[in-house]
Image (tube, rainbow, N blue to C red):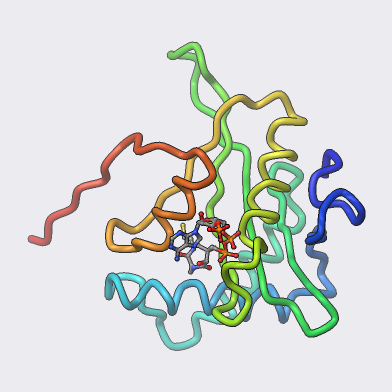
Length: 165
Ligand SMILES: CC(C)(COP(=O)(O)OP(=O)(O)OC[C@H]1O[C@@H](n2cnc3c(N)ncnc32)[C@H](O)[C@@H]1OP(=O)(O)O)[C@@H](O)C(=O)NCCC(=O)NCCS
């Protein structure tokens, strides 16, 4: 993890998730998605979504261009972060970037630096690959999410607009 988040590097240790963590990873991912239903019903889960989520996370664990991070203290896993490399055709000077696709810290563990530790470990992994830019999509109504990313130095980039027909 490029030193970031490693035990001893800071107060909060995060680590790679493994197949042995699959139940916890799925539970945290589902909690993140359910949290977003407060903002937007598009995030609702279909019946049976859990099996699909499990398959997706298993694939991400196998993907060398995706990093699955977990905060798992003795009290139990309470934080998840997924980041992946994203490639574009050679049109613009930048052909590779990263995207933090998911970040979740359980309610009871918030505002203690867990989110920051997970995000910084993700950024360390990205930086160690020589990738200079990372994106994150944040629901427009997710005020806490926006405040968090702003505190970490992220700036507005593209607004995604949508319209129902
Ligand atoms: C966003 C989230 C991951 C932050 O995790 P966290 O562990 O609470 O964050 P940290 O404690 O590391 O916070 C780091 C800094 O971000 C800012 N911040 C975090 N949460 C904030 C909030 N609710 N309001 C304002 N600023 C906030 C603060 O500057 C904070 O530093 P401080 O506590 O010293 O003031 C967590 O609130 C969460 O999981 N929310 C639900 C899911 C979500 O929105 N995920 C992001 C989607 S893109």
